[in-house]
Image (cartoon, rainbow, N blue to C red; front, side):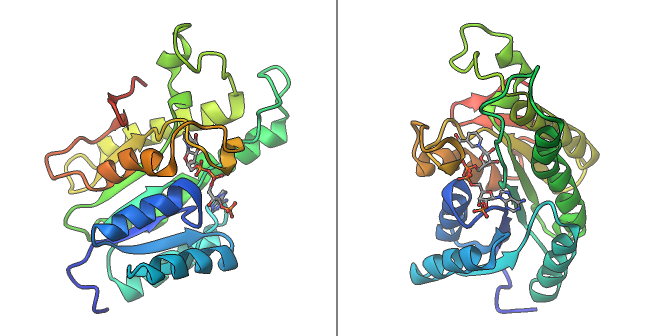
Length: 245
Ligand SMILES: NC(=O)c1ccc[n+]([C@@H]2O[C@H](COP(=O)([O-])OP(=O)(O)OC[C@H]3O[C@@H](n4cnc5c(N)ncnc54)[C@H](OP(=O)(O)O)[C@@H]3O)[C@@H](O)[C@H]2O)c1
């Protein structure tokens, strides 16, 4: 175990670019040691180098959220190098169904979306939970989306009412269910679990059509990753406050 004693150890998945990279950058700026989870080594190392060039403590960790073997090797790396994990930001996500409606979405697309956005997140979180339990103040942030809110989908006045992407949206609704169930299970521990909606952010996910910057998108995630001990758990937030389930 290392010189990082006393520093928060923070792992962000899909941290090689976009919102995930910016979350890692902002948390490093606050003094965290950040672990850059990325499925592609070259892209992950590039991100690590960029943060190191800014003077931050960053380490690439090979992590494909769909590959349980990488969950185990990542957990082993964190255990051996740091002995604990303080923050897990489940940021990696995909959106594949822009061209389909609920009546036409292919089964394989639906399953692929759930593999990454739901099953993979649960498996990785389960693999890292023993390390989060070693933290004095564990924080898990599940990066969801306002599109996961069934309440908002029922409101014709809502800005994104017509964005009815079955695979993506329901994978985030399911992710929100994981937040609620895990937070309840951990309610008597030091670990807080919340869902974050970064808002419509210009990234590769949407061909840069979003109107928020990655700095703006990252802010609610960073807030939830740095909640004080009396902060919320089992909730769903955007940068304006609580989002209805
Ligand atoms: N942008 C928005 O408007 C918006 C709104 C609400 C919620 N979100 C959520 O915010 C999160 C980040 O989205 P983004 O907009 O930054 O998307 P993005 O630009 O497409 O970046 C997605 C990141 O996830 C990684 N990733 C995808 N599948 C992976 C896997 N199986 N294993 C490991 N990493 C994987 C990608 O890695 P590669 O570079 O290797 O592909 C990339 O680093 C997602 O969960 C998304 O659903 C985004």
